[in-house]
Length: 209
Image (cartoon, rainbow, N blue to C red; front, side):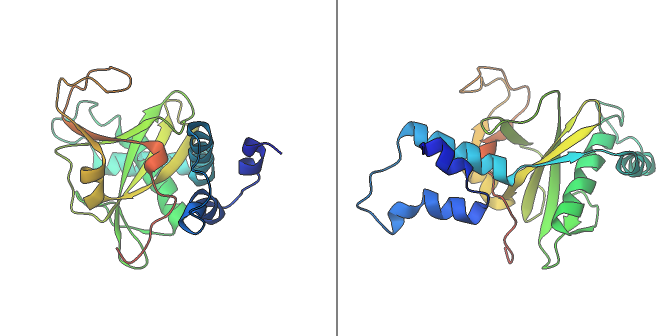
């Protein structure tokens, strides 16, 4: 059995975490090679990512929420970005069992009280583990966790990608100023932001924060 076949047989994030960190308990083992580490990170992303078909009921609910919200002052998209944002919010809410409490600082509240803000990005392709998520520098909301989602431009599919504690995100993510090139792709950032690869996101929200 190859290493990749062994990894792909793991179907639980907890099991994968134990497998990936076994040198903590058996330090005599050889460290993972770069290729093995890459396969572990890919599998982690596969296990924690949830693909969600956007049906008519969900889309109708998102459109109603968008209409109620209206167009934000100075909105670049003139309100057009509200629908996919609400699609992401509804999807995450249903998957984690949270309650909606839409404020500037957060969108959802977990049963234990943790406040979650959902960051949704539109996409034309399914997400990959080495893609990025980002938070604008001027969006440091007073919340406990960020949840990251992606929604297709066609509004037919969405993905919940993972979570990260908001306070740690700004210390663990890479900070780019407006005009800086991305250290991997070279693209120029138009606004100051904090960027993190998707494989670093957590698969669940741990309470209490």
